[in-house]
Length: 372
Image 1 (cartoon, rainbow, N blue to C red):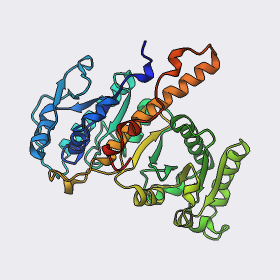
Image 2: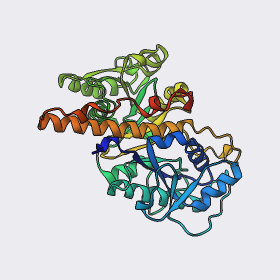
Image 3: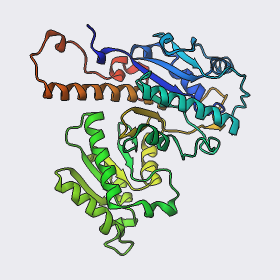
Image 4: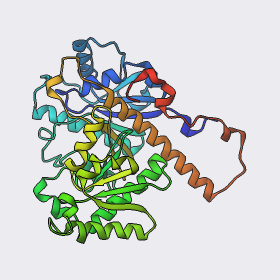
């Protein structure tokens, strides 16, 4: 009997802003047939819209329309038709009407994730301004996921170079210090540690915590938050046996290359962590929402209206988001299996020795992408 962990992962995809590059990077990602060796994708949207983009961009890919999940076919780009009406696509233009379709796609995909119709969710970029309404009053995907799925949602950017998590994410800079508390830092760091263990199989992760103020407060001369709030949270984690250090002055930490000595970095606010991350990994990094019972990833870029319809959008980050979701899903399954075996030890069987520990990227080979 085939083990569950050996089955192809069902990847749900929300289309994002239909006037942005989301449809293009989705189509380009699944134009390479080798990706179907690892997953069965389903896009929550419309075959009409994706066919329109396929023709406009001159792409060659088979689009398979379905209306029920049981119709999903392996080896094809499945599209769950959730709209019947004709949609007015205006490539490269923000449009609140299009924003409603982006929200509808996302909500339907999240519901499918919650009910187990899909294993993981990959979200194409949205325009945060055009999605706002009475039905969706959230600064982005992460906050909605936390409300619907529960858990301690943590925005984490991941690449081969670094893994950066945020204490605060989409928050105006003038409000950041009001949200920096010892308890919040502790909880976010704890979520980061547990995610690195469960989702990335790092047994004893080493964490760097960044300071809030320039020079990490310079011993109180430039602010007391670093010594009075951040340091106590670091000490608390150290007392619990965790390898957590800081607070570090962010400029020197990244400028000196010290980040390479750590498994994870906890930044206090959005730009503090994402500017150095994107300088080193833009176009190949992945946004991962850690701390949730379900897996969600997304590319590290936005709607890129200026590129829409030109056929030049780079799908590398979106493809990496798909592979990251698959990898994390399989690692979680392995972690659950290990826990079950520790709780109920049994004699090994021949079946247990069969299989591969390599990731989808490794199995696909170097020619699939130069970014792997």
